[in-house]
Length: 255
Image (cartoon, rainbow, N blue to C red):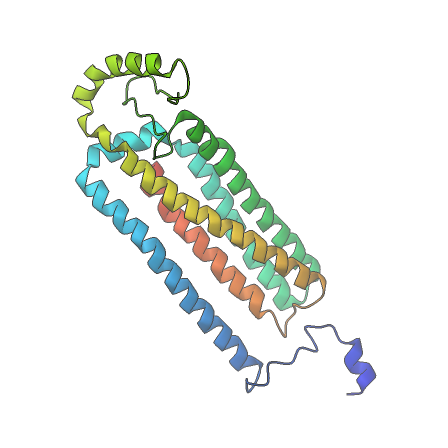
């Protein structure tokens, strides 16, 4: 092959593996092994959240059930679940596009995957996190717990009317507390919810960054039948993000 012919090749066609690899197949297997090891560490991290969930669910079963119904909307979680499942399908189609050498197929499916991820984060931040923060449902110094069956107090101690609202809520919550005594542990449920879902949301955001990087590479013809290793690894990462949410959704929203 002449020098001119080499220059006419697309980047994925002219790709040469690193000098420390015997061939492209060895490089691919090494990259996939490294990704699987990384994903194993991710599973270990989220396993800690699931273990905490299991322990506290066992200790406070009634609290867990009532807190889930009181604080979370399963319809929002179901919508986000459907969107993430769609994104897993589209990223597989993007990898298939690379195998077929179809740049348009790669780009369009990665764009849909990005849109699904953005939808997930917008729903999570706009419909869940921000309203919960304003209501005082973020565990910590400003957490305002009124008990189920009563009006939820969202005032802070800096509000001139806060003390009056707290007194009114406390008076009305006395009878409810007789029926929902375990609800004093709502902060534990919300702590698990916030930490687990926020960590997952961070992974979704990181996924959006690497997918954007993959889109740039695809636009430059760096993915094709001869080389699409990084795209395949991004797909593995994204599938793990989706699988983790598939566990979080029923455990938190459908408990």
